[in-house]
Length: 412
Image (cartoon, rainbow, N blue to C red; front, side):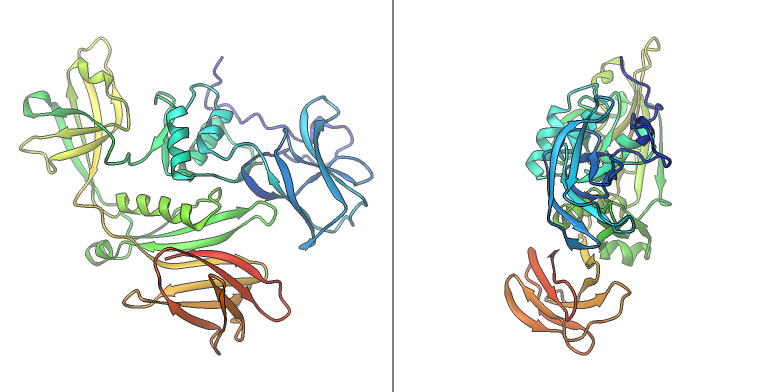
């Protein structure tokens, strides 16, 4: 029997085990992410890293340093429930910070949705995510409803979901190559209305991503802008949090599509049509042609009321005005404790200025930077280096005296 979406996520906590004073939620881990293991035995040598079997543990750190003398295994806890254990040769100090990099359940967004809400098999969405290389990494470790959990995961994949949608989820907006379901002319539309929404228009978006569940913060961020929309509508800023997205490529691709849709005035039309329109699913493209409509052309269906018993189908559809604007990356940063990197595209877009700071934002002049293995380039007195802005993904390695070197990716 399908559970109501208003039900809480069925997450267990440490109250399932005897002898615990504090109640901690046992996480469900998907993809690859960093988490704090939860102590399991009184001796402090056995920890639980996930409330289910996992694919593996890749690394363990203690107070930020690589730790040896550990092994992981899948097993059962005192209640017979499947969990993943981390066993240490010696118990760490109670004040030490223990962190494990865990490979959990499948990180394909469709698989995560199916695990949360096993109702319909989202096979088409699964293939779509696989073709895009979409892999998420995160942990469900807070109390939330099933609806909130489904919404969270769909947003990370740049998708929308509905309990009535075939396969539960789909990318939004759907690709222009998706089939056109139906065309409606003036004689096909009844009781219509149209309105333009400007309050939600966005021209610049900040995107924090790659969440570190052990540290409780995002480790990377990017700022994207639609310059033409900014010139026309002014700076309208928003934040798109993608904590489960682990790479800059995925974060920027998702944010670009998100911003292109929202950087234009959005028209919403409602109309009634005949009962044959009931077959149109939410998220489908339809063509609307009416002499009084503000926009003629393709719209995306966002809601459909089949109107059983009335003989009419009520459809709500949306379309942004004008072509999709070009989106540029204003800034991208990768913050690792204790070095942070940030870059800005100079006017003309042919030079990148990369600045190195510590976790407090203090510049680190003299830092050494390798770009795609070439270097080192030594940062100047302002802790900045410059290099040619070649489009694509670049691997950046940063070293600073007395600090742990970091390697990150930037996308131009």
